Amino acid sequence: MKSILSLLLALPALAICQDMPLSQILIDGDDWEVVTEGHEFTDGLSTDAEGNLYFSDVKGGDAVYKVDLAGKTSKFIKDAPGISGLQWGADGRLYACVAREQRVVSFSKDGVEKELVKEVRPNDLVVTHDGNLYFTMTPTKEIRRIDPDGKMTVVSEGVVNKPNGITLSRDQGTLAVSDHGGKYVWAFRIEKDGTLSAPGNYMTMRTPASKPEIASGDGMATDVHGRYYVTSAEGLQMFDPTGRMGGVIAKPDKDNHLVSVCFAGKGHAYLHVANGGIIYRRKTKTRGALFFEEPKSNEAPPK
Image (cartoon, rainbow, N blue to C red; front, side, top):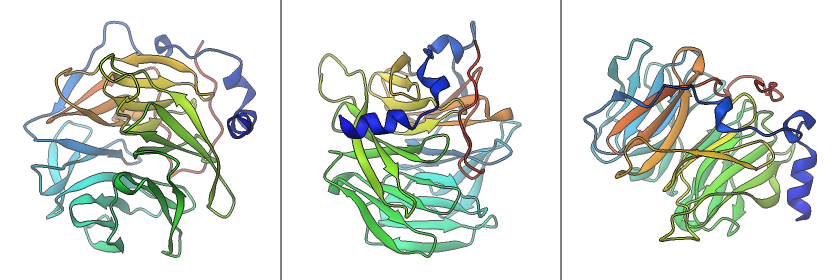
């Protein structure tokens, strides 16, 4: 309780004093629309400064794919199979969890690969503006950090049962991690030296009636108002900056896994989700936080 309270006290007062329902996000009359299809198992949604979307096909693909603002899908980096997590860094490199090969790597804009670590079990990752990379290791219950000098350390072990999705608070002072084997999203304070402290089961996800203790939390994203989004068995769950449930957005295809989420497109105003072999999007009243930009406080939400 003490650790959760300390995190709450660090949040902007504006966010604490008002509710953030789905009506502040969703546009009446708009629904999910197909962005790209014909894949086997899409994952690793990420965006750049222009709003282009990047993704992988973990099971059936052999590249990092790009969807440009005109909606055209192409192979951005060829010969890159088995990737489960992607994110652009402030240094202009694209960071990736190569789950199939048990490596974490980065790519330059012209596709040149650099191996960061190997013999790991990476699932998903996030990169702070100052170059700290955090990634989840679901099978070993670990969260690891690669610092700007390339040194890897274990920053959490055994706290989250099956750490999976990962994101940052708007000011990049808090790390949020979803539990694929439980019902919570956990939050950690990021200390000045990059270590993690004050773990707390910060957000309680809705769970299926058949598995009341397992929400199957997966990919995560954050918007400019500090709201957190997490994919799950029940759909896309949204929480306000204080950890309160704001609502659940139904997934486009109820019969397939919802595994990754990202804001991309024009103005980064479109929620994108990886739902089986198809990526969908819907326009929103908000926009995504970009962690390769300077850390910022939450913007005032719409009334």
